[in-house]
Length: 434
Image (cartoon, rainbow, N blue to C red; front, side):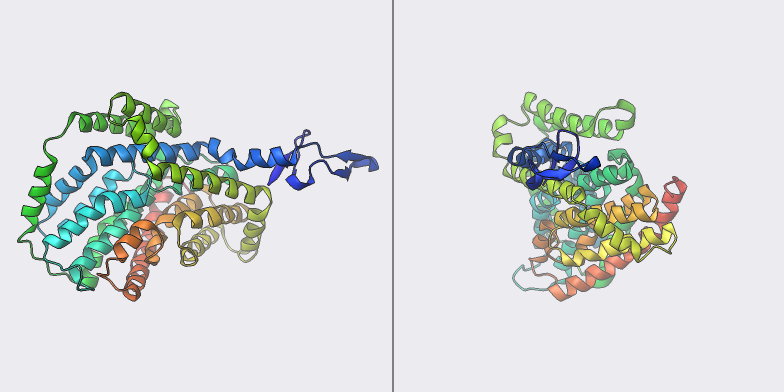
């Protein structure tokens, strides 16, 4: 860890209280506390607003799950659009898009809310889960897993690692990349990729669906939920308020973390959540601890010069290229480096900072490189069947074999990259990001 001396210098904590030769040959002591300073650095991530934003958003997601509102929205979409394979695919995509701004865990969103409905739909279509590979189950599983990742890329609150991307961009480029900037930048390419997803997977797998029992099963589940409760109405009002304040951050001047914290307080006061719900939300507390630790790790990698060293090493191989070529090259290298990781968040922590540092040295357009890394942090997750919890859940059902998942993931990644580097670049040029 790096400690700060009384004179404001940063040094390795193990050098505290040691002597050094200063200007004029005089000896001085590094005046800092090695143990206390190390501990202060170690827990600094727990006061970081990024950690608190994700922590609060997890509790908002718990309210969506507890009230049954997330399931109600998903069932309504599948029920209204489930007259064809593409319709069901788009219903799953819409469900992910609607829930993504409020549930920062793509695993909780995809695995806890959308996945049970997808599995219910697959069963209603007459698919035996024990027969192994199946075009119908494979179609819905791959669409749902991909939609989960695309929706994660669209919002800064869509995935736990996204705020780290925004934080590193602020540290290295000095730019503010909040909720509204993220949505504006990601909207056009991400939504187009989402639009192309169901027909693309349909061409790959050509599923033949039997809709005999689907409508009846959806109606049965919807009837079991009953009419919308007062808690759901209060939740909807709170969610809409959050969305307005997040989007309007530049105008209202209220930080996104403050908005999320206010939402938790309001939901408790309105009896949508109880304090017991907050205490027992193990996923929120678990993520809070490891995310805070990851943030400290990322900050210390920068403080120790590791990030700059990797960035300079990357930049040396591109020093003769134009800023745009450098930006595209770095983003592609970042995208395919996901093959080396089994966690989207660890990929972000390890590589977002170094790639931003390389972009800074090479003079890459800050907002352009930031949005590419922001998009690719989630979109690259489809390359493997083990990149994140939600993808692993769908892939583990066995409707698509692992070799085929790798192949389909690579094919869909190529489609996504084509969209990003054509339509995306045009969009970012229009809004003046390069």
